[in-house]
Image (cartoon, rainbow, N blue to C red; front, top):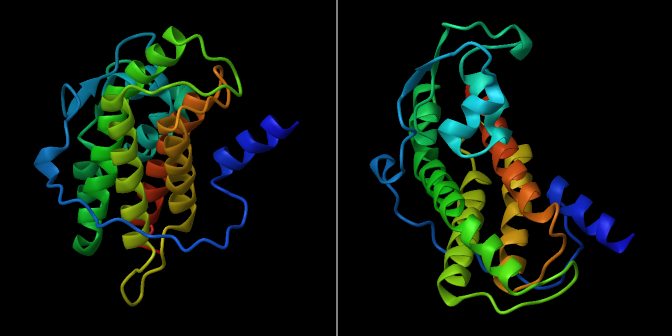
Length: 226
């Protein structure tokens, strides 16, 4: 039961109350060009394909399927037609082109780089804990390269969330997206410490949080930051 509650808190971006003062790291300086792009900025839908497959190919995980659908104005994914042309630019380019206010571009760039960096290191983390024969609830020694990469991603999430929490006049902060990224950051910090919550679900939940977080960001931008 405790494990279930913990995983539920992670997915919803919630956490238990703490009296410790949060020290937010500085926002890393990331340019749009620093964020790896998908193989192509657009694709032609092949027969039998779907948004989950397209999202995985472009953004490393099927949880970005709603992001792809929203970006391309697809309200009913089941009606996706073969031969349709879909936009699949890099994440910061997609949000920029959707109308992102320049004030928020640095935070979005950092969030995007955090995701692409995590997508690259996560398979190594999963391999390391399996090699250590870690089980649910165990702790294992995380290789230093992986530990540092996980913490760097978490710090970028925290800094970006803090930046987005202070919108300019006339805008509201993207709270639903921030909750997702905050939950992902908490999980990555636990991963870096070698704690295994669930071999079956914990890394998948983090990937889901990124996909949902970016989809929520896109909704926010398309709603004129309201």
